[in-house]
Image (cartoon, rainbow, N blue to C red):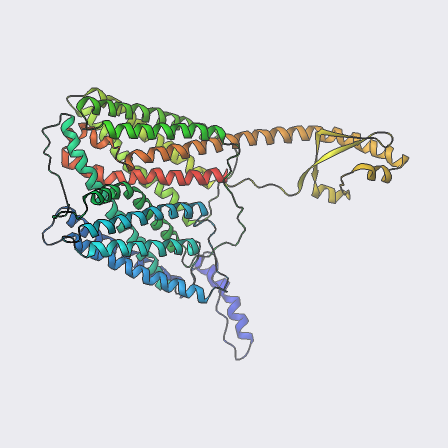
Length: 603
């Protein structure tokens, strides 16, 4: 039946073309449910080919990164950096070509995806990019100090990466919303190359930061009494002396404190480029999107509680990093302090999320199920990256259940791990439902007017307690035209007969509209209260997610320092699990904060 319908739809075009002698029949336009002949299949093949190209590009780089990490024979860091430099140079050439082509066609009207590349997202990636440039300058200074024993690629890499960062941020600011409709096959390969180049740079940053954290973790285990674990530092330090000891120490330590921002920059860039890739050749619905700016009005309570959580979290992280590894007693106190604070924060977040979901259950509003690559990617990233922390939490729960001996501080790990699972489950439901809910549309025909009560004579008394709900459509049907009566104009327009008639109409109006005004005002008040509560919850959860991003990003990781999981699962297996899952857990918090910011603007 579908084929017959498509054939029937093509028939009129063919028939119309045969009427004109000497003219070829017009090609039929593709209709809904019918594939475009000769158009969709090559583009679908180009999408599949480009995705396979990107995956193979990523797997080759991932294997090279793994080989360097395990000290494979014949593979050094210079090989890995050479591969990354080559990928960045290819992406630079593609971006320059795209920017030049865009400049030559700047007068053309381009399709834009209004949901992609939000301004706050561009500002966030710009902030991370600036800190990444500081990281590159530290790496250049580190190379200059150790230039006698470092490969030239370690000096070329930060320079290339800095140029790559500047041009990529400019490209995303100008073209993140583009819906590419020309040179689609070539552009698919260029964009997917950029996506996986950023993913490989993200992987390289995660590995470098994880190796540094692992070395510190191995040294801390001695103070906790786990002496049966073999301590072998995986050190890639240069085999020569630094020319300036003080500068080398600043550069080497500063690099690892800046890596979290570099990691977030590349993962955000890859997601924005992926949306650009999904939008290639897409037919965009042309409709105006209402701007939703962020406003502090009405979210004071959420901001206050969120800032309290943020401040306390920073204090906990500082104390944790000072105390952990100092002695066994100090380490156990630091772990206990961390778990108690995290349990309290997660319990508050669970409560806030449940309240928000209950409010949604009480509302009768439809969901927006239109196709949107940016929104779909947000939901997939929330669930996918949450799996990283869920894996760590289940590992901790099993370790507590199966372990033979339990230090006192490990029992706090049980409610902490359970709350991590529940909190992310509730928060994901809240965010995904929020970004899929349709915004309330204000009816332009409904206008609120003040009723002007006219007494006998020329005296006017305004009654602001009443509102006239004027329906434009009903007024047009009845032939009535509303007006605002002001000052003496009403007095001049109304004579004695007019006044009595006006009084009669006014009395009827007060009776008719008082009931409808009361119901409209009460309903509007309830809606505003619900919206205010949701905005405060979104603001509170936004700051809480930023707070929970800070500890793992800056080295406060009890999954490393707890020690119980290493005894149950073994040191190497558990460290591998933590190194694989922790980057996703860190990204989840930052991505959740970004999504909650959007929810706050949309609510």
